[in-house]
Image (cartoon, rainbow, N blue to C red; front, top):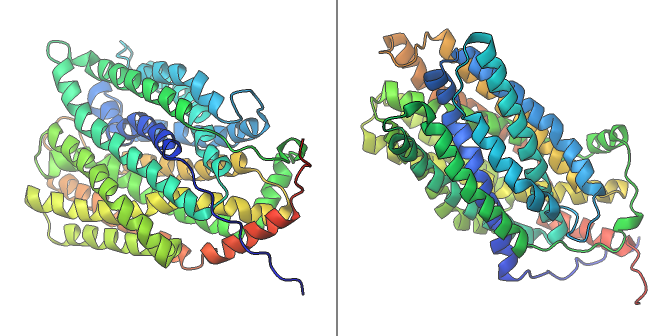
Length: 461
């Protein structure tokens, strides 16, 4: 038997590449967090949509977003421009993204069916444009380096900036809404969205300027299989299937937590909107501080161990919150902070595990399709987020939630279950799936070496 080639020497990226790649997710979280935390409550308490209808609208739009993602991934894989394969989508999509985001929060004099249609149409538009910019950005990591540990550091940089962006926008959004709503409350969310998206546009431009895609010698010769063949190849990619399932289950847990947070704070804790903003800001701040520890832990223990350990910590914190009943505000902040620290392990390893599964698929099939893989992962992730958003909306209806009114005791108790029990179940299920994930740094390095050994290198010019 021939010897397995040794892994290629580690590639070291210059600091500006980490900075540039991280800035991209800083900007994207100016869009992502407001929709995750504030959109459902905006629909129910400001626009006046029924909570069940609002949840279903979010679900439809997220599933649509997920369906568009693989198509964007395929398009990005086939793109060849002087600006690169993935970066042009950031350059030319940043401004349409900002405009479509503002329209989601535009006040309109509609009611009933017309209001539902408007909310659905504007969010569908935004989700489509978001996919066109965000999917190529995510796929770009796999074209920046093949080294698994470098990807760990890129993922760490990405999450560091992502959490920073979330912390800023989580703190700023309710305060902008309160400030801009003086004298004209109906348009407060719209102008807040316009300000946030304008700043995010400038940051995306900076990310474009500081990143660089790695040239692959055989890129032009690579064939592009039809979708059916791609799906059959991914069906044989066991690490991808396991990672996708674990991501979906965690996505359910995290979305239920974030979407229920404003309701829990206002009606269970009796807090103001700024308390929701403080929690929404603290969560990514704690996760940002946890990036380095979890990056180091995953390097020395493996991504699977870090994933499971983080979720067990987060689950334990939510279990305590559930058991103690109504905590004082300090205890609430402490328990949410501990849960946020644990969940940061998933944020780090998510964006590092997916590129590893790309190489596993290339090793098995000989075809490299990172854009399609990232698109399909986000389809699965966003479908899970959509289902969980619909779950929150329908659950609010089921427990008798009435916007802007004192809630019945059974409704208040239902809010406690919504923010603790259901996320715990999703996290534990994600842990169970990751127990079977076997692709580690050693096996990944070996298969990358095999890929490198069989890849033809063009003669020098």
